[in-house]
Length: 362
Image (cartoon, rainbow, N blue to C red; front, side, top):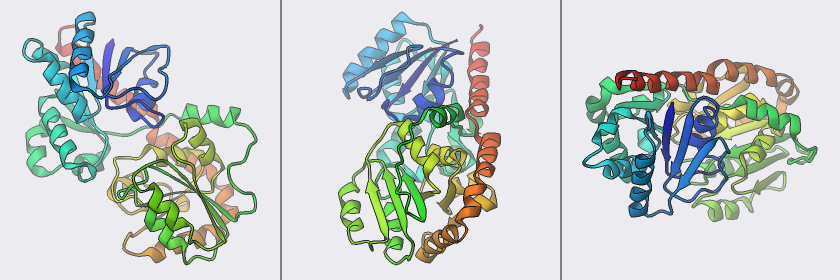
């Protein structure tokens, strides 16, 4: 099976690469093509190409790839690259649309207006539309879903547990958290309004816990959040480490007691699935994508974003039950593996890919 995968970017947090391409590197002949320059190197089993942010150059790159290879499947991971692909095959190769699958990686309300328009266009053109979970599918407005309902299905999101196992085996003995802290918290994600890190920092202003909180990620709110954190009481120690490699992020998960996401919107967040497998207790905003994850009740608390006291009380609960929480880390691991393994996700996508090959006469 020859597969062309299209994504906007390739970096340490890129789901199309980390979950999809790496997961299928031994089962397909893959070409990964990104619109922007790659930030990390591509596995030697995967053919990698990238543009430089120029639409014209991306069109030329795609046309040259399509001349050299006859792809069985074109998997599109962003509306932007999807629309560029349609332009690249117009007008003589439009038959390739019968081989396309588009994945909606987020909830519709989280997308910018521009990305909603681009995603809608490519969803209309694609042969198959998959969403990352049921909540992502249900987030699509009815007036849009009307046009794509017969070709849309929800596919469970999956994480690479073997990568976490390998990091756990090979990691150094360097500690990322201060041993003197009562509670170690990791918060992973882009630093922006949607991810809502400010809600956590505001709650920490009035909490009597000796805690360390490490933020992993970059974003437009970085300077604002750093400045706000300087006014927190001395018992709260905050670090902003920026964007780190996936393996380094996993090391933090393995060491942390708690992983917190107070996001206002998500797809089905990989970082939370990875944190759960790594054994973190979860404190999550009560949005539908988080509810869909539904961790064991002993290993998670949901909080209402209109009530900051719930975040505070959840952290007090962790502090007061820290020994029990540390001893029950394996419950999270077992649950996540049973319900969100990358193997389960990829088997559903393989079925989609093979249906294309069958319908196209192979």
